[in-house]
Length: 118
View 1 (cartoon, rainbow, N blue to C red):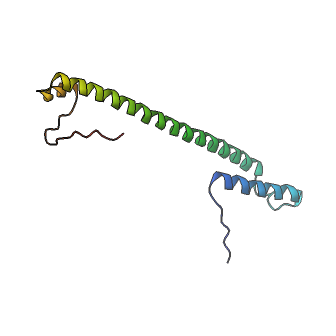
View 2 (cartoon, one colour):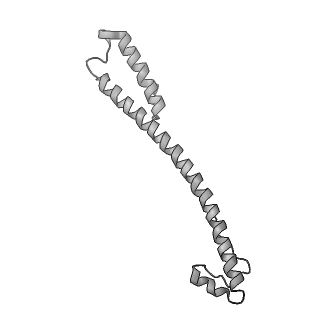
View 3 (cartoon, rainbow, N blue to C red):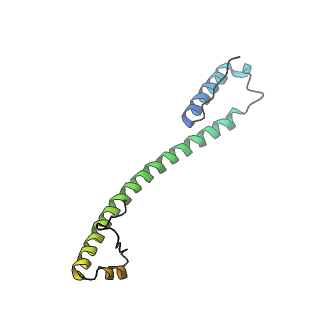
């Protein structure tokens, strides 16, 4: 027996519903769906779904833009903090541990300090 697949994404559902509605309208009063399904209600749901999809797409674009701005800002802040670190290291060349009072984590084990990735 053949299977009828229904794709669940918004564009596919909207397209399929448009085809169903077109066939229903073409059949008019003789349509099998008239006495069983309220296509007007389903059409409202489809329109709402499309609106939600547009809003979700806009939100995703905004999220990407905000993440790019956040990453850019984090890089700038890292550079600023490196300058602060370097200034403090120059001021306390013989007592680097004093940078701990400024919030820096002092790694006495490794020779090279690694910054955390952004």
